[in-house]
Image 1 (tube, rainbow, N blue to C red):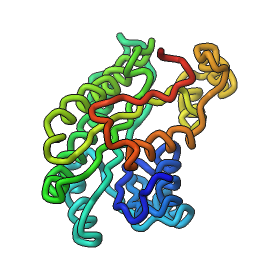
Image 2: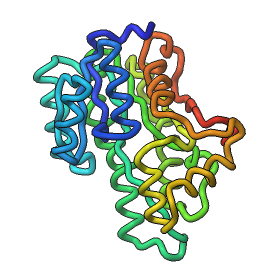
Image 3: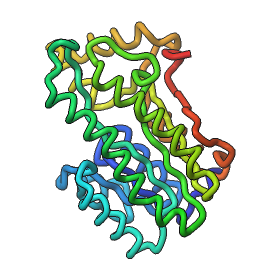
Image 4: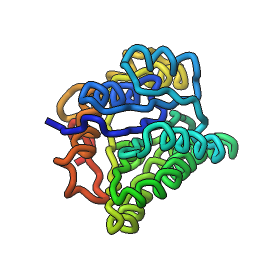
Length: 250
């Protein structure tokens, strides 16, 4: 259906959660998936589990490591067709309590990581005259979230980054789009509960209250949106934001 067989795809932050589901979904379509994460042990476990073509441990905030990762992919596979910028961290804190270190870390992982990985693949994609970059944003980047100003800001920044870069590189045959998930059932539910000092179930219930469809999303639903944009069916999408969120943002 998606016609993604033998495409070369790099999925950042893909040792778990949404990134892992995206990588597994693409691999099931016959895509040669290179998974990336900063956690080497978890990365190797995931690579075996989903049958990834390659696993490369790299910190997306480190330009040298990012460039080396992309160079390795080009040397081994001779091209790169898809980049899914998924690597990210969660953060919850009242605005006046957010430290500069927290703010900079959020910017570094989400925005600098997206910038560095995208810049590293642009040259090879221009040479190929084809390629797709899909950036994972968030519903909080669309509407903002209380006690998550730093997270909301960077996710909104990813949307702006997507729209601007899409205009710049479309003429080179490169399509840039974004997926902005709503509340999804992932390990981040547990992380959010820990940050707030509450139970996981209370986090789920609070999130569900904001969703017209009355449930959390599943990672497979985000992977499907990414695969659609990555496939030939997504070839007329340029600078767009697809938002699978159950109506949380309309």
